[in-house]
Length: 286
Ligand code: PRT
Ligand code: ZN
Image (cartoon, rainbow, N blue to C red):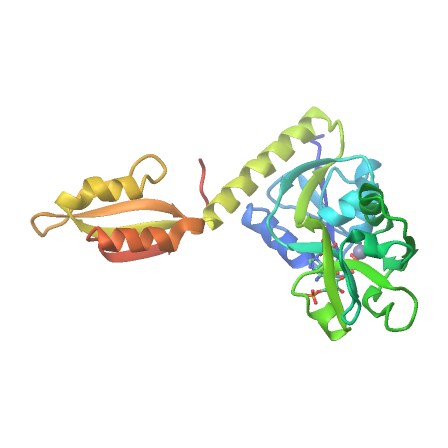
């Protein structure tokens, strides 16, 4: 019987929608759903397990799931056996220490003899050890941000993304102790057949993510500007140049990275490019 790759994703919550979207963009066809425990993938030897994110590292360690998608913060906190395979670029956030707005903060020594409420005791303790700070950690599982207001703690360490939760609770961020995003993790020592399936999935994820970070660009340019424009637009190898009907003009096709996209557009315009079209790429195999 052919082996199936068991993929654990979050059942509901901040990671669920984008985990499902990523697997679908990788060509996996399956019926997703909140109420389901698992779903078969129709066109790839895999099945998807819908679990609480906090439980996924343990399932990976126990080989109940072969691979999983979770926040790096949870992976580090749980300290379970497993390998980080790939950062996935979504659910970006940071784990930060915050204190009441009115309190003064100089450096981490301000936290000496304070009480810090958090759902991440291991990561916080590591930070305190590194900084040589002696503080008490009070572990709570939710609504960490209200702890100072009700006199439960002097400070909190919680996940921050926009910062508005801290703000509405009268807190200010004073230390960022970890930056996190969704990651793909795998059990250690996967059987070779499963390792091959994982390699295929990683290949597809890389193609999907490369496509997201790049745009297909078409433009018209006078022939005497092509050499300079080519320097700005190396593309995947070099741009495609095709002559236009109009004498002395060509059309150039290339790929540009999202990061320096606007700067490139400005340079292209100043080199004489016209009629610039920018088109999303669906998959990109390098
Ligand atoms: O039920 P289950 O256990 O599966 O889910 P959960 O409630 O534990 O996790 P969930 O869905 O809230 O988050 C899953 C993962 O998303 C986290 O482990 C992080 O890796 C990532 N992530 C990204 C976040 C946030 N952004 C985030 N903003 N996780 C939580 N938050 C919370 C934070 O705890 C705080 O209460 O949002 C609030 C802060 O947000 P801002 O925008 O106000 O700063
Ligand atoms: Zn959770």
